[in-house]
Structures are given as structure tokens and as C-alpha cells.
Length: 260
Length: 260
Image 1 (tube, each protein chain N blue to C red):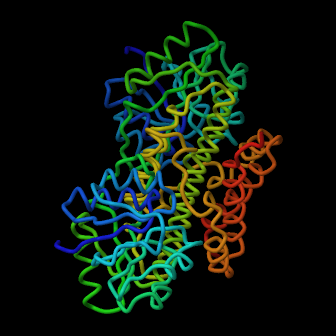
Image 2: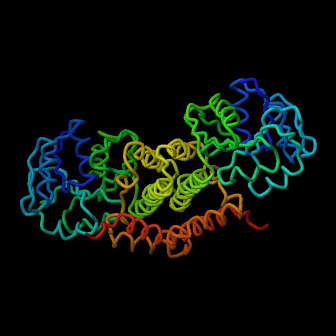
Image 3: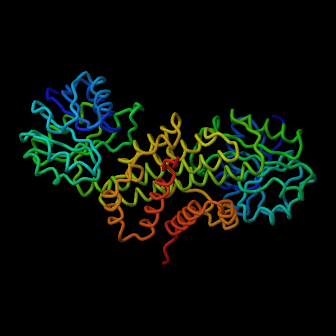
């Protein structure tokens, strides 16, 4: 693809996506980040220049990928000049229409994945959720996504918002379950790696079964003795106890056989 | 291994573990289940006989693996005659000492994994948590476990109880997070498979990073706009809204930088 791309942001997602685009031959012309060290280190890896002031962003890119926190995006973009070049944000939570005031050409380039700055991730299967203000821009963003992934989908803002909420459960909250489990066994001198085959199988099961069919455990069986034991063990941790009870209750409700 | 094994129970765990033992050449001599169809179908796969009355359990086994719901185990065992043969339960939640009244030789044979009856699972990496009333029985149960897994560990009852609680978070609650995510996107005509690369990467990350370092998402960033949007989207689902708020709060507390 012969379009020049500028990267607005140097966080987890901006870093991994821009490196992958670069590795697949896409020309990255500039990185913006307000933090010099972040801007510099990403620009070095990409072999391009960087700016730390929004007013200084280059006018020479064809596509501006905007990957900054949802909290600052509007304020930041209002300080940049895009001259109606194509701008696309990478956020699950921001409606495409929010970009309309900054350029006549806009869209969304949202990879449904969790990114950490220093962790390499395989891109080919990541679903890229594309949306744009017209067919031409939709085609450009789809082509850009397909340089790094085989799974490019047209997803509207409402669907994307719901996907992002679902991803909080399937990823952020799931990872927090791992963190809680880790905390619980560390107290008994057990290493986290003892849980890895279980974590791996739990994730693998749902490739072939629905999560409903894959469910196991005391809350599903309504094994009250075990559940009582568990909540007693959490007596010193009121927040965890609340979480335990609420998730158990929800599992139970979810799996209730509807009355005929 | 030349010991004869009887299987008490024909649920998810009993089925998968006994089939694996059988496949690895261990002689299974009998299956007990109160449900004829379960007993019969497992016994057929194992090529052995079955009983449905606890009084009828064979006296000819060397090891009795007890894999029935924690709720019925004591009542059931009191109806069986073991003649001081080695009995071992497969539960995370039951203290080993609960078996003392049924035989002079007893222990625990607990695989830390989630099992579904009709899903084949790779056993070689499953941690088998072994405990026994003496060294001899410990050695027998460890040998039995090592016919099917390379990860055999001596774990005491208190550690195992904590592991089981941790497993509820790392597996049962995690799978329920997948179920909630699935429910949320189904409402917008999105297929569950769009979440699979995210689920897979979330589980893979913690092989190389701690769950603390792997955490991402709006609750970690304290992105209040996104969190407010998400709870608004859950307005019609009060239980999910509560879960969302409580898990977000807990993530935030967990990642708070301690005051110096």
C-alpha cells in the first residue's frame, strides 16, 4: 500500500499496530506523543521523525491513525490540522461521528485485541473493525487493515461499542480473575504456573463449545457446601467475597432452566 | 502400573480421568454411578462392568477413585465396603481427613483442570495434586498420576482448598465472563468467534507476564467517560451493571500505587 501514515499516540495499541504496519512495508512518516520519551522510542523503532506538540503534526501524511486515550482525543484533535486528509481512530468506544468536525474524510480502524507495549502479538487473526464516512475511505482503511490481518470486518459504531463492552468482560475482567487467583494462591506459597493449564483449557474450550456448555464448578452445580466454604475463606477480603457471591449468583441465574 | 482401579462416579471428571487411565494401560475394573445410563456408557467405553448400588461395589480393586459431588460423598462412602483398600477422592474442596473413617489407606488425587464429559483434553501438563495418609500411599497415587501426567505435585489439604478457590476465579468465573460477553454481542448480531483471538491472547499473555502487568482497559486507565458509557449500556441489566462496577472498582484498588 502506497499511503503514508502518521501515528497519533505512542501507547500500547499505537506501538504494536504501527510496528506491525511498518514491518509489513507500510510507510510511517511521523509519530506524535506529548511524552518525549514515548515519541522518541517509537519513532526510533519505526525509523521516522516525531513531534510532541499537536500543532506541529505533519501535513504530508495520507492517513492519520489516532490512538490516544478516549479522554483527551477531542481536545487533542482540535489542535491539529488535517486539511481534510483521512483520519481514523482506533478506539472501541468512540463513535465515528465524533471525528466529523476535524476532517471531511474520517473513519475507524479498531483492532479487537489487548496490546501491551513490549509484547509481540500475532496480527493475522485479529479482527479489524472498519467503518468510514464513505465507500472510498472504507476501502482505504480496509486495505490498510488487510496488510496486517486476514480478518477485516465492516462494523458500525453501535456494534463496535457493544463489542468494546463485551471485550471488557472477555479480556479486562478475565485478566483480573487471573490476578485474583494469583493473589489467593501466592498466600499459600503456590506458584502461578500451576494455574496455566487450567487457564489455557478454559480459553480453548470456547473455541469448540459455547461458554454456556463449557461452564463447570460449584455455582453451576449449586454445591452450597463448597460455596459456603469459599466465602468463609474470603472473610478477610470483603470485596472478593462480594465478587464471589455476585458471580456465583449470576452463573446460577444464567443457567436456570426456564419454567415451562 | 499393575494396580486395579475402581471408579466411583461417572461425571465429567470421572469420565475423562478414567478414560485417560484406561488409554494409558491402567486396568479399570468397575464403574459405580447411581444413574444406570451414566454407569453403563462409561463402563462400555472402559470395557468393564458397572454397579448402581453402593453396596455392590467390588472388593477386588486396589485403588478406589472417588469422584462424586462433594454434597453426596460422605453419605455414599458410608454405604460402601473398602476393606482398608486405598481410597482417594478427586475433589479440590474436600479435606483428606474426611476419608479417614472409611479406610485405613486414603488420599487425594486432584487434577487441577476443568473437564467436560465429551471434550478430550490433553493430560500431560495437568497438575495432579497428591496427598496421602502415609508415604506408601503417596507413592502409589503419585505413580498412578504419572501414568497420565508429567506434572505430579504433593499438595496439602489447606493448599488444595486455596487452589480450588483460585480455580473458581481462573476458570469458572472466567468462563462466565465469556458467557456474558457472548450474550452482549449476540444482541447486536455479532458472532462469538470475533472474540476468540482476544480470549486466546488474554490467556496467553499470562504465560509470560504477571496478570498485574498484563492488565489493560478502561478500569485500569480510570477512563471515567468510557466506564460511564458502559454502565449506561447496562441499564436494562442490573446484575451485569453491578458486576461491571464491582470488578472495575476492584481493578482500580488492585492497581493503586501504595502511598509512600
